[in-house]
Length: 114
Length: 209
Image (cartoon, rainbow over all chains, first blue to last red; front, side, top):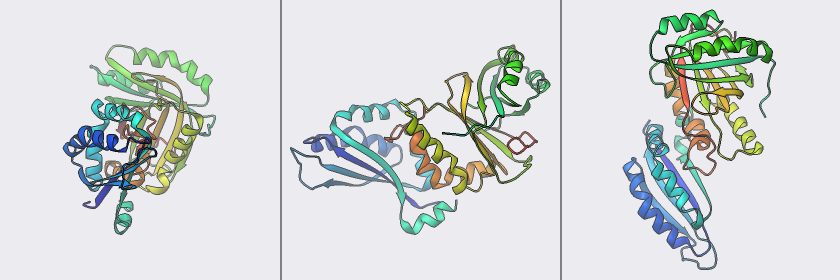
């Protein structure tokens, strides 16, 4: 099961807080994610200008290898209080956040036929 | 909201500190199906025991005797869940040679009735997407004991352990969709990460008897 699995953090920053949110994420979340076997592929800032009166959306794309890699990172983060503490610590910087998990459309049939 | 039939069950996951044979016999003597919990469990105990009851009154009549064993010598701790049968499905009537998996979970994260209903509906659809789940029952707990106030019991029967470890764990409906309820990193997080994940081969049909 070597399909690439994507973990997508969709963070809507509080107005004017986009840059601060991304800095916190890079400084206090990314190192742990990498240590759990995740690869940071891309960070997309929408719109690509730091807004002061409105919200930036941060779309942060990670990858792991297959469902095994997915469970590997989940098993580590779930019981690590530092991970939950990080998400709690950024509450004031976000309006909303979602995490999605996906794969390339070409891999859907094989993954779902597990 | 899960539908409840008149039938009820009690599942006890026992952590032993000795005397397994005597405790097995005592539990069986009180009408339980008893089996040794298999390796690979998580907080699943050493012995699993399941009783069926016609109604709540029958459970309350049996309860003192059962709890005398669960709180007695040789039992270090027992996690228990008494429940009315909730959402039930049978694909393989009379399956007695497979394994029965029990998950005790505690949905304790500010669970509104609407959120609980969505969680329960999505959980109950797992067998639709994951054919390795041969028989299943998903129920709300009426009375819980042990480490946490367990709110739900998710039971499944598989043809063998490979069905549980392979297709069940690897299917994207599980890890990419359902698991967000169990994941502190997801905004839908609902379930306490401390679970009882236990599975055993009883040699009798549990969910389709």
